[in-house]
Amino acid sequence: MAKEAQSEIQNPIIRVRDITVQFGATRVLDGLNLDVKRGEILGFVGPSGAGKSVLTRTIIGLVPKVAGSIEVFGVDLDSSSTSQRRNVERRWGVLFQQGALFSSLTVRQNIQFPMREYLRVSQRLMDEITMAKLTMVGLKPEVAERFPSELSGGMIKRVALARALSLDPDLVFLDEPTSGLDPIGAGDFDELVRTLQRTLGLTVFMVTHDLDSLYTACDRIAVLGNGKIIAAGSIADMQASQHPWLRQYFHGKRARAVMG
Amino acid sequence: MSSDPKLERIAKGNALALCATGTWTASFAPVLERMVADAEKLAGTPQRIFIDVSEVAKLDTFGAWLIERLRRSLTQGAVEAQIAGLSANYSSLVDEVRRVRATPELDSSTITISGMLEQIGRTVAGVAGTVAGLVDMLGAVLAAAFRVLIHPRSFRLTSTVHHMEQVCWRAVPIIVLITFLIGCIIAQQGIFHFRRFGADIFVVDMLGVLVLREIGVLLVAIMVAGRSGSAYTAELGSMKMREEIDALRTMGFDPIEVLVLPRMLALVLALPILAFLGAMAALYGGGLVAWLYGGVEPEAFLLRLRDAISIDHFIVGMVKAPVMAAVIGIVACVEGLAVQGSAESLGQHTTASVVKGIFFVIVMDGVFAIFFASIGM
Image 1 (cartoon, rainbow over the protein chains, first blue to last red):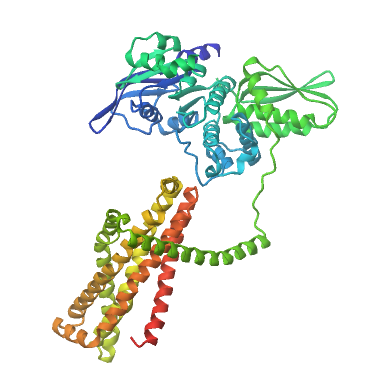
Image 2: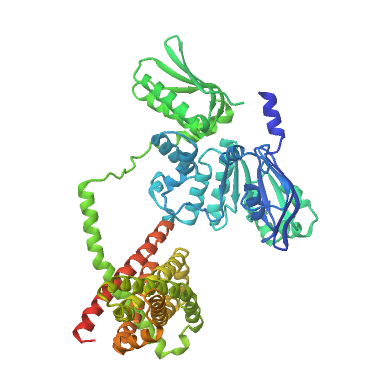
């Protein structure tokens, strides 16, 4: 078992090779390579419109690619069978930028939706697990019977996270989880992601613009530019980089304010 | 790496150990739930109970919660159950789960007789609210129209023309096709039955009166309610959901003036045009069938038509068209602005828009029939 665990740890959880994505004549991603290691929180940054969300959506399979291969949990998503793919989808959770909660279902039904599909467990257990998830994301149990339209922006993000975590995934994609939250709320959210990553052993792929998130939550940072990863490494590596965009990003006015 | 989970009972002196082994994760949740429910029956035994989790290979929220649930149900009474052998990896998860409050009773919606009666009562009371809402919207639209008349520069011509294109121009092919077919069918049926009395030629009278007075405008109004009324409701409803209407309001625009008035105006102008085209298509279709199927020559058809109908029939039909358009538009806009935050609500209001629109069109048609009969038209 130890050996297996060793190889599982050594293999990246996501392996992206030579990905090219094109919309009409514009090439958004151009031969991009990226590895996400097991158990890390990878922060993914880049200028607006660089294709961060496109890469996320390509990995999840929502955007078709022109060339390249994507392996998640060691399964090549192009050549996998339907059941293999379902198995992979069951092991990841996605937090969309706007939450993407089902508007006609209550919070409880939203969180239970994947459980209902994939697990055959009693209503009681689903209700209890829902409460556990709500507690984990820092919401009160009373929220469970509300509809998404009755929630604040921060609560929507938390409920969406609870839904993404509904089946206890090994991997979560967060698309700008702290955008639209106040700084305190955003800080809490970073802390929450960190805590959940520790308790549940998650791997987190986080697209973000938030410098605070990069400093406090992320283990490693990858920077997207010109359709490629222009740099990947720790926050210290990023600060040491001579790349002009990185210099501006990590040494700009806002960055200095964050670093104190 | 994953192995079936087990929960074994091992007596250790006067204490009882429940040894959990294997993978305690979501994939095994049904099995785990059964085992834990089984073990919960031990509650009330005087022995001290340990839940030994040192052999658990993998734990997630499902497993951790079930262990916590077991601990809680065994703790009732004097003896406290304890979790032993927790590895450092999972201690934070178990701590996290320990903070979860017991599930509050969720209100289950059961159907009772009093609940059904209440529902009926609410629906009936809601009818008055619906009518009030329609009148309210009519007033708001007229007020906006009045404001626009005073300040013609605030009239949104581009928007009105755009909606004219959508509800009038683009509707022409389907409206003409369907009314043409209905004209054909009326003529065919008329000839088929009138022939028995040798009264073939009277099919022209029937076709002319029916199409110009009733069928032309009614059929077109129903189609417009289904085609454009639903579109209005869906457009306004999704704008409401995305707070676009609130945004307009905060910028100092009146949503009635910006969104509703151009749509209403487009519909009120479009429906008479469509009704006219529809009536012509139906007469043409009827004439064609009368010729090909009934042997009525086109010249004879036209002569008979001239005798059978007067301008009154045509006016009766055309007068109804803008009123029906106004009814359809008001219902559609009221429903659109009543949409709440969910996709389900959007669907409900779009349905209601079409159903109520058609219902009110038919009611209006009945009212007009009584009115025209009493003034002798």
